[in-house]
Length: 107
Image (cartoon, rainbow, N blue to C red; front, side, top):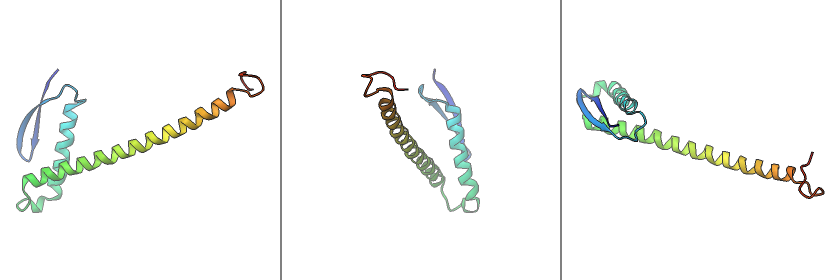
């Protein structure tokens, strides 16, 4: 079901149709608005010198950077889990099959 999302950024309202596959469009929009507000607040004294486009670009770069860091962390955790799973599987195989019992469970 398509959802219409309204985002207010830098005093302007924008409406978007959210993709059906987007998990929580309202939360995604809120996250973006908060990132822009943080940058706006941090640069309140420079607003005349800093264009709205630069603020939006900084927000996009910050979000992209966070996203890539999280992807790297997820990949590292996934690799660690795979490694430990393989070690556990090997250890279980060595303990379950008894060399003398011809496949009997070791006790």
